[in-house]
Image (cartoon, rainbow, N blue to C red; front, side, top):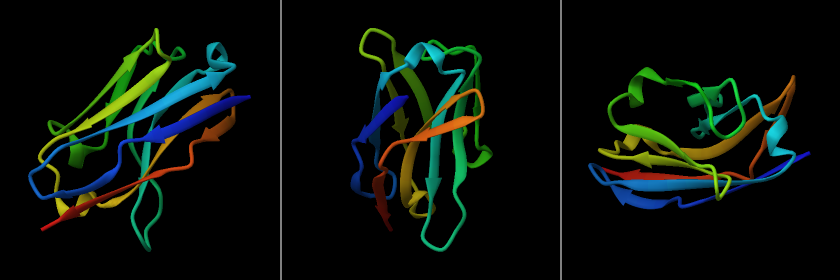
Length: 119
């Protein structure tokens, strides 16, 4: 079992920045991929960034094309926490952001945190 808790969402004007956090606990050494997803109202959940091949340390990072150069994922292995630094935010980034961890074929999700970008 893996537990994920997100924080850091909020309301920001276009061009602003936010940093999301995802604290992991439980069987974190079993995690083979971790990342951030988002779901805008009325749309399907989409992958924002993924880190694969190894728990919280990770080895390969892939970003959604629309966030490349604006979003940066990082990890604090000591704190078992993953961060998503979001800069130059746009209204189309408005969504509920979810932390995800994969253990084999099993997905674990956080509760989600709302990010709203006003124009």
